[in-house]
Length: 236
Ligand SMILES: *[C@@H]1O[C@H](CO)[C@@H](O)[C@H](O)[C@H]1NC(C)=O
Ligand SMILES: *[C@@H]1O[C@H](CO)[C@@H](O)[C@H](O)[C@H]1NC(C)=O
Image 1 (spheres, rainbow, N blue to C red):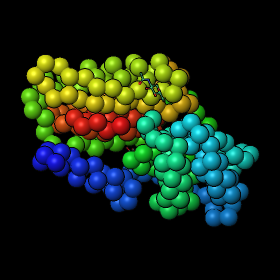
Image 2 (cartoon, helix red, strand yellow; image 1 turned 90 degrees about the vertical axis):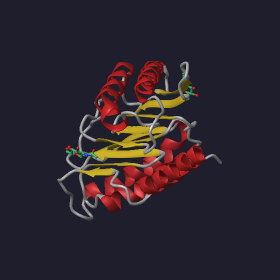
Image 3 (tube, rainbow, N blue to C red; image 1 turned 180 degrees about the horizontal axis):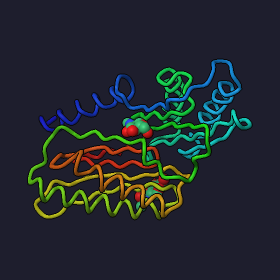
């Protein structure tokens, strides 16, 4: 293994670990519900439904109960996940979201391979502009300015492809003359329309790519409605 491959490998492991365990990759609403209330029961049913539905296609959504205790939620697995890996991820996220956001009326949790989100209101079809974060790859790219431009071109192409794909997912690569080859993915939650998927990715990448990943060999951008990643080693 070359040393840059090794560094990447460590970063990958560390990230998988961080996102699964200690990393602050969740967001909880402030308002709470009472333990053993109808909302608590509906939330349990919702999370079970998501764990069952999501692995079939990589995306699931459900609404459970009657207002005011009605709860709406969705789960999304990375487009490259097998349904078995998707199932484990959503099941673990569903358990963890209740631990990290105990009795919260709304919450989102991001894992390396999936996200789970629920709210007390019907948020389907809305672009989530509140919940988002990014993680840069710590390694610097050679020829950073040109590499950044190449990355932008790849992510812009993947944005267009994802919004045209029925699964709202795209992956691909690009290598321009004299630069390291870059690989990427772009994906949206499937409650969004194709045009909102495009908007979600354009806004996320436009806002966070420069903040996150200027001159970096890779990075991950996450929101509650879409995600994008690029790396110099195949991430899918
Ligand atoms: C969590 O939600 C709050 C309120 O909407 C927002 O200001 C904050 O940026 C969010 N953080 C993450 C990581 O999504
Ligand atoms: C569209 O999505 C499918 C699966 O979700 C994937 O296999 C295919 O490669 C995607 N198309 C593009 C252009 O990335």
